[in-house]
Length: 214
Image (cartoon, rainbow, N blue to C red; front, side):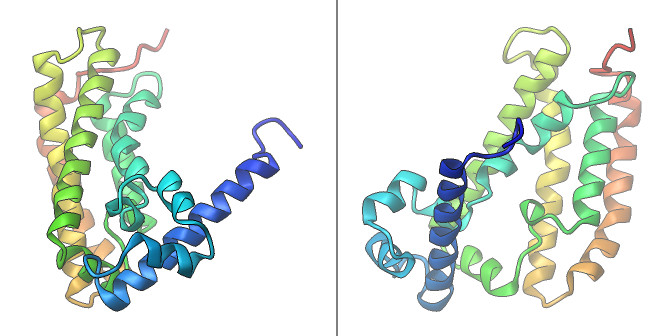
């Protein structure tokens, strides 16, 4: 096993998590999120109820199982920016890449999945919470990138502007998925708007949080 390769235990945990998530998604689509219990998910996945809650402490995250990726995506883009690259440029680059690859964390899903989310107040509330947590993580990343104190106002304002683009794109992708559009068509339709949105922020943020080249 080479360095960085998951060990057998981690692989088994990942497979169990995926099996639980897949079983839950199927039941939620068939019967509705609110009418499906954790116990029913456990039976469908062939695991104990405690195993389900160990992997997914919140029922909502059985559906929104990419919540960690959604929360971390923008902060990781800032942390991973190249020398000489601004936070704005890094977020633009990674967001457009997400559009091009039809990233599920940006809302590219199947219509039944999107419908399940939109029909559940609990899931919509969790989705709003995920977007808020993503913006908070981005704020922290921007503060760190500019050697500013946590909660720095400039970082919060910049994060609010930048996170609004991703949130709006997610909402638009979901809307188009529910309308029955193919992912390729959605990607082609929203990409120009995403480019314009980031370009509009260049005058304000192009020189902000630039990684030093030295």
